[in-house]
Image (cartoon, rainbow, N blue to C red; front, side, top):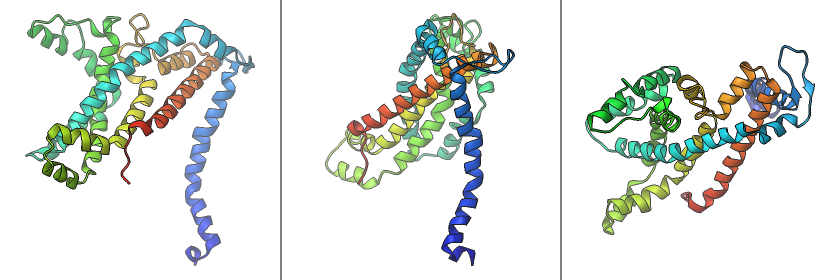
Length: 295
């Protein structure tokens, strides 16, 4: 029989893996190699074959102000987004970890934004953040506060993008953290309660350390998503006003498909890859200081 023959067993495994491996090579590795080659070339699609120019694309990007402005925009987004998404998703997870009537319905409702397309979500948030008739500014005016210009104001456009991103992502990260909370044995809390620990002490000494691997995952994915920020920016602001919401992927898209500078766009994409790779490695190194794994 085929499954009892060692040689045929490995052949069977190979045949099962082959479609996935071919897909990875054709749609992953080969396009990456093609993009790497183009990053050392000048090519605008129309004027003939690519022309090799060495590191000129990378030098021009790093010498120009645009790259650093875009990087500054992303860092501003990260400073706002990461703490807020961690606090909101952890709060949601703690809420959903309680037992009360209708909890399953609430768990479903909180996940709806996650499965909503960014096109629909961004259009909704453009209306919500409208400075004249938007829901948010009307609420602020109701309590006596002057609402900002949001997407039309250079200082408030990125916070508006952050609000939309949190609305979209909180259900996803909340569910992940909820799974982490469900994995904590009740015996830890029972022992702490016997020792006289209050709610805050139990949260600080038991909950946070035991979900720290899950928090690490959330932070890494959040950071990667932040550097790959695109659909909400493209739909809500298109990089404006005055470049206040220009980000890496938005620049890559425009250089590739609006300005037809494929080599320049490829160089931009590889710089993005390097930044994300370094940031992820740094997070993996720093995890030893605060991530606790149960032995």
